[in-house]
Length: 272
Ligand code: E4P
Image 1 (cartoon, helix red, strand yellow):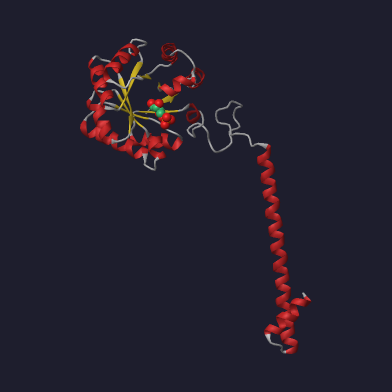
Image 2 (image 1 turned 45 degrees about the vertical axis):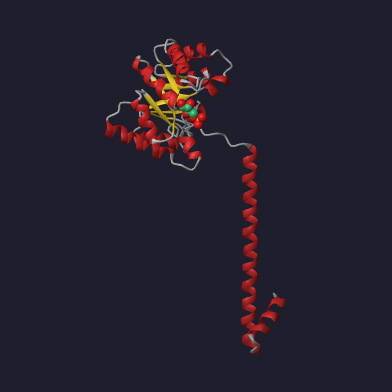
């Protein structure tokens, strides 16, 4: 499974590319807007850094306009992939672009049947949105599993690009499902437990493998918690000691005076 980064930020891309495991990039209009840069220049710069497919999305909603944008985007770099939404207009554009030999990533896939449509339209990639499905109480990774299985049964060669990943569990489950690629935001990829181990790593001072330092307020909260626990334990011990004394006095009274247990309790508790 190739690991993609879902970002348009050049610094993030350079950092992860330096790890030597960056398989590609996916961008979308909201990620591009955040960078306050010219779209074409930005995509070209990303394509130079990354040795793998870089998805750049069309913004048009009608097929004709998507085709104009898609054909233009396809000329920006050899490794650029045109991203089209999984709508009827997007599917028609995908069909036409792929006929021209242009690679298309069909995005916003939320069901197996939609993935079949994307494959039939000739998409190079289809992007099921795992995290977005989890957000609505569905199992996004299960969708990836099903799409991979159906594509295998049907012999489709469209690549399954698991998208909208949010954490390490998504990465593992999509890999187990047999996804061809998985794209995740920088925050997710720079933190995923594939790299970070739960055991503190003393080997290097580099960011990778080290644990986040505990903040002073966390240490203070921990010691307050410890004191509270100690106090509780001490109070409990005192109560038990008192009860033992009461019981011992009851027995003594009963034995000495042959009193009823109720009277013994009243008398002995005043003596404790
Ligand atoms: C993928 O191509 C998309 O850009 C991306 O994964 C969107 O996911 P999100 O908006 O749910 O984070």
